[in-house]
Amino acid sequence: MTPINAVIITKEKDTLQIIKKFEKENFMILKIVNETTSIIEGITNIQLHKPDLVLLDISFKDDTFFDMLNELEMSIPKLVFISANKQDAVKAFKQNAIDFILKPVDFNSLILAVYKTIKRTKMERSYQNQKIKAIELLNSLNQPNDYVAVSSLDKIELITKAEIIYCQAEGRYTTFFLRNGKKIMSSKNLGEYSAILDPNYFFRIHHSYIINLRHLVKISKKEGYFCEFPNGVLLAVAKRRQEDFNKFIKLKE
Image 1 (spheres, rainbow, N blue to C red):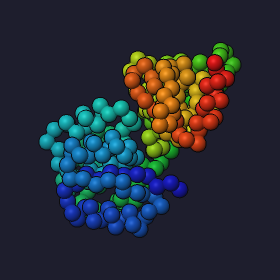
Image 2 (image 1 turned 30 degrees about the vertical axis):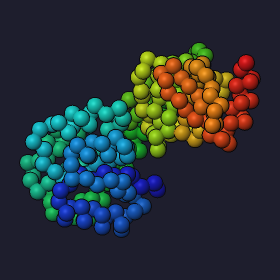
Image 3 (image 1 turned 60 degrees about the vertical axis):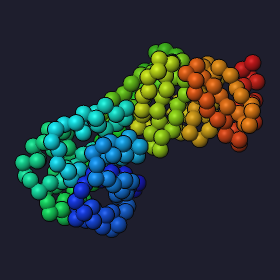
Image 4 (image 1 turned 180 degrees about the horizontal axis):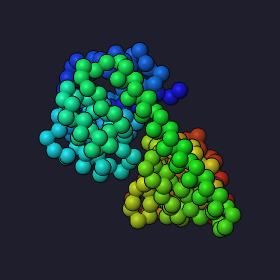
């Protein structure tokens, strides 16, 4: 089983010590990728690490944290609130928390919260995969497959393949950069899209990037290969892929 990644936001040393001890004894199901005492740093770290779970042991004066969380261009992680105040459970479930842990924190409460996260995540991904397969089947039966279904945990977006400039791997996620400047994040990894995107136009220049040849402005060969796009982005071609990329480009000339 792949452990779920978690970010902890707490100023309480006791809470942090208990969760870290829990992680040590249950490393198969939980991995702490970051810990912080600050709400602002918490948002930054959530955006950076894209955790499955956020453990919150901090008092909230308003909904600023949750507003910032909803504005992130990514799937919102599951939230577990930790508090000594039972009344905080109301705020927790108002914010769609997956669980509320009343202090003192114990291993039994933590393991229930972690397994709720695992179960919910699996259910959501299974549902999204079913929807994507149905969409792909309809595309194959009814029309040329000009779209790609991009799945996050809370929605599926259909993107015209011609609109994609490039795709970027971000850990287990993939971000699509579109011609209109929009970015869309998927909960699938880049490798899964390698098999879906049209090999006549898309090429994986690096383990982190797949580019769309239709939007390639020029290729610079100074100090390696670099692909330039209309939005000014330069992406390097990995050395081990340069020969294949050169052949790919010549086939299109």
